[in-house]
Length: 169
Picture 1 (cartoon, rainbow, N blue to C red):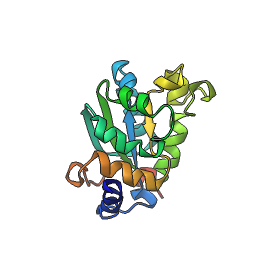
Picture 2 (cartoon, rainbow, N blue to C red):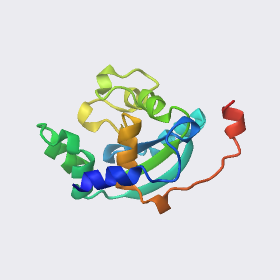
Picture 3 (cartoon, rainbow, N blue to C red):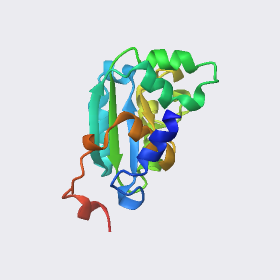
């Protein structure tokens, strides 16, 4: 029930969800935070031309994580994943830009790092699937749901970047 409410709430955020206003949710997992990969992850998204509109370092509660990973609740790894993600600080971010969901997924690499190409976060930073450094929304719809779980609307910055004219036509 709560998930339905959050999905509905995601649709009333002021910013549009298409074109250059598309948004995605990215989280640096506890292994990425502990291994000091946050700065490089942020830098790569900025170099690509995406705009950071939400950022916070936090200890995620098991309740939040259970809701976040709800679609996996019947899978054998669910409880272990929730425990792992609540074991240390997480950096939650919202990035905005043209095709940011699809591009963010490409930048992350495959879920299993052994299948990830060099140049991707998981290809460069990871060895095993259980410690794969980063989470990213897999669709615009999941981005809406995840952003509304992790951020209040007031925590997202609506701002005009001066570099947009140098990135988009």
